[in-house]
Amino acid sequence: YKILPKNDFHILKVRIEEINILIFLKNLVNLKFSYFAYLESYIKYINPKILITFVDNNFNFYKHHFKNIVKIAVQNGRRIDPENFRSQVDNKINFYTDYIFTYNDNDRKIYENIGGIKSKKFIAHGSYKLNSIIESKSKSKTKKFDFIYVSTFRKFYNEETSKVYKNVSSSEYIKYEIKLIKIISEFSMKYNKKISILMRFPENHENSTNEKNFYSEHLASTKKISFIFSKNYIEFDVLDKNKTDSKRILSSYENLYLANVVIGVDSTLLYEALAAGHKVAFFSIRGKKNCLKYRTFAWPYKISNTGFFWNSRLDKKDIYNVLNNLLNITNNNWKNYVKKYSYIMKKDPGNKKLKKLINSIA
Image 1: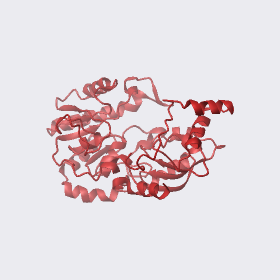
Image 2: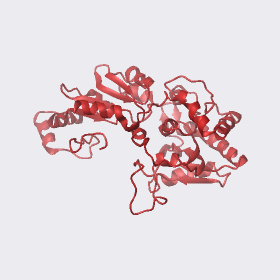
Image 3: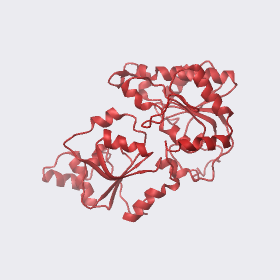
Image 4: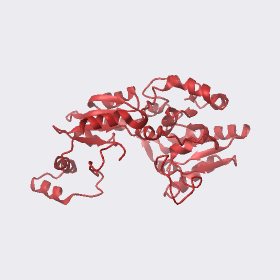
């Protein structure tokens, strides 16, 4: 809604939420029975100038080929599951789009080399959502939380025998994270700091209770813990008029501005926080199995296992060092220091590059 021409776009729902009966019946008459054929007929019927998606890991998008329609894909999350990307590749099919907007310059390798996707042009612009709010003048300078730990909780966290990958069970996937949050808990007690968990699920979600119980169990050694529930993505300047600003539910991006230090393992939100200028501690400790190596800090860039604000070794001393580094560095020094890592998550405030491209076509 923010970047497309007003009242001049159509939303195609691709998860079978609804079916256009007219197009469905026309396909039946023409003996076209697949859902892919239905989507293709739908797009041809609408006949847009641009076909754009934020579901950049849906390979159906790249299978569609139209002579007079420009296709644009916008990266909407870190693609740290290359095995899944590779499994969708069919050498008989030509995967193509005109443009792909990526988080950084190196991400093109994921689409080209792993996904087999050809694109006329790759444009590194960072996170669309972050770019949409990064210009806000409403950023809070008051730090309400010592540490915000970004939750990556999934339903399978409570299902020990379920498979995350072919050779990685749920229990193996989370065992190092459990050790990590216990070390962070010990650190917070030693230095009188409070841990706040930025929950992945909203408070009324069916998985919310399980998520809260998971962290309560493993952080039981400290009483200095709180849970932060976020509203789904909203703009900084959008307020709930029925509530005061202090009582409304904030977005995840807004909550990050309240943290002195943001901590986590491999969430996309951590990289967005880094791009936004927050002090961020990255602990890439999932394990050494081949399918987990893509979850190391800054992948697909190759960076050393330890650094000023990251660590890929589950070593108590190293973890303490990273946290102390971030607590002790001044905001100005951090701002200057972290500039050399801006290539990991690019920025384009206001999504000017994407808007410019759309306007040039539309």
